[in-house]
Length: 324
Ligand code: CP3
Image (tube, rainbow, N blue to C red; front, side):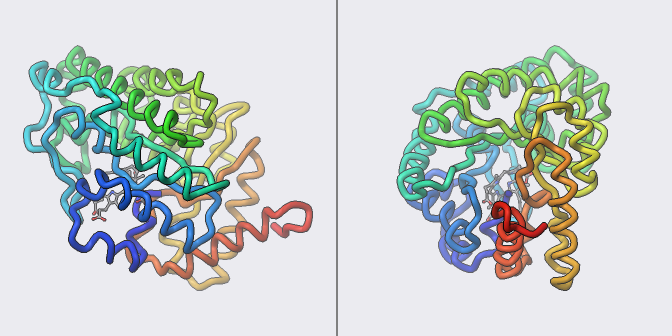
C-alpha cells in the first residue's frame, strides 16, 4: 500500500535530497525503493514506487507532490478549456515507468510486481480541487453543475489511466490496482451515475491482458456492490467492513483484498495477532483473499511489526500445516 516505504529508514535516506516526482522519474531509484519493502518484509508481491498523479503530470498538468500534503495542482481544472489542457498520454510520455518496470521484473525474479493507477474520480478530485480535499465540494459542484464537463474530464482521465496501465502490463507488471481512494465520498446513486462507467471503461480495457485487476477505495461499505459491478477481479476493502460482509456485497466470483486497520500496528502483539487471524478467517468467505492493510502504511509504523505480521500470515497460509 501507499507509503509502505515511508516507515523505512533506508527509504528516507534514499529520498533525503530527491523530491517525490523527481524520484518517480528515475528508473534506478524507482527500482531500488520498490525492492526495499520486499527485502525487509518478505512480502509476496512488490508494489511499484510511483504516485497516482504521475501520468497526469506526464499528460501536461503542472503539479507537485508537497511533503505532508499530497498532490497540489497549479491551475485547477473546472471548465472545458481546463479539460483540453489534459492531453492524451502516449507510451513515450511515461517511458521512465516502462524502463523502471523492466529493471524491476529482472530483479524480482519470481516475485510478482503490482502496477497501479488512480481511478478517474480520485484523479479528478485532485485536479478540480487543486489539492487534497476533505469534502470534495468543488468536485461535486462540477459534477452536478456541469455534467458534460465532468464526463469529458473523467473520460479523458480514463483514457490516460488505461494507457498508463497498458504500458505497465507490457513492461511486465503481473497485476494492476486501480485506486479510487476517495470514491467513498459519494452516495451509491452518484457513484453509479458519475463514476462507475469511467472506472468500468478502464477495467474492461484491461480484460484482454490476462492480468488480475484490483479495485480499491476507502469508506466504500455502501459502494462495494457497485464497485464489484465495475469489473475488477479483486475488490480492495478498508478496515470498516468485515471481509465476509464485503465478499457478499462484491458478488460472486470476486476475490477481496484487505483489510487490517493500519493503526493496529500500534497495539500490543497479542492484539495484532488476534486481528490478523480474524481478517484471515473472514477472508475465507471469498473465493480468494489478498491479505493487506485496509489503507496505506502510517509513516510512524515500526518496520519490525510489519515483518512480524507478514511472517504470521505466511505461517497461517502455508499449506496444510498452516495454522489459522
Ligand atoms: O508505498 C509506496 O510507496 C507505494 C507507491 C505509492 C505512492 N502513492 C507513493 C507515495 C502508491 C500506490 C501511491 C498511490 C496514491 N497516491 C494514492 C492511492 C492510494 C491511497 O493511499 O489511497 C493516493 C490517494 C495518492 C496521492 C498522494 N500522494 C497522497 C495523499 C500522498 C501523501 C502526502 C503525505 O506526505 O502525507 C502522496 C505522496 C506519496 N505517494 C508519498 C509516497 C511514498 C509520500 C511522499 C514522500 O515520501 O515524500
